[in-house]
Length: 408
Image (tube, rainbow, N blue to C red; front, side, top):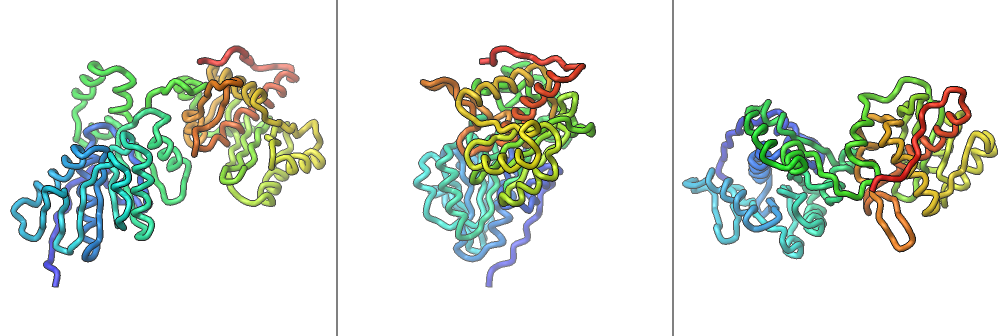
């Protein structure tokens, strides 16, 4: 018979409770430094280990051995003198009275993370670890359908962890995203306002924003400019009628996106979906009675032809992408964003704009989302703005339209 263990739950801030109580299988948390993320997740893993059965594995994974050892010592120090727990200092393991094993591991060599079946895991400082370590850790959770909580500071926008967080923000199944700022930690009484103000004076702005406000730094390859993107944000979608649309059609695992702009260039209609071509055709047939530009490259071509036949080529423009035409389209959108000629609410569109990048190649400039990410909403916005310019060029009261070189 297993001994009865009574665990006293610590007092946690509201944001800590929200993360730990999330029903999502995977939580992604980008957080202010010293906001209590490590403490709360040590507690969560400890509690999880007391729900398992003899031989079950529970892992704490950190980028390097020293960081894993810090977390191990924090848990160990709470258990010193308790004979019900077996502590192995050399292996950094704690065996609970239920016979479950909590292991503290380094992600330095991802090959060492393969093999075991893990019931629950925490990936600490995940944005500072290699993506291959996440791949390895993820496989250990497959057979058990185990949970994992990833925690860390923001670390640039080309970081694999940031891109994983963007997927969570976009509604990826079984994922939930959390962001903890210095203001949250001050409100919870974990940090002092004076310390935040001193850190702001001591640190470079980009470093301060990453470490205290979980705002990733500009990686230098975004064609729009992160500050310009932020300046285009509005609280909600416009309630004014749309005057034109841009549509990007899904290819394989991508999303189809329909996006409308009102006469002020604000996003007034937005729909993003995955589904059959029949569903896509039905959605577009019901919506598209205004000037529209649609990406007709590849698999979308038959749908565009059908729409042109039913609604007319003057209403529906088939926009075929080549390296040159996509560059022209994206440079037009970059100018619009830099001059705040388009406006949109925060969310998946902002995330995709943030992660979008340009790369100089031998044949020119290539514009796309990083590998593994989506750019469907960016393409839809660019197509909508392309159409928007045409509509207002024919209007008697045109809005200012900006043209010029893209910001490097």
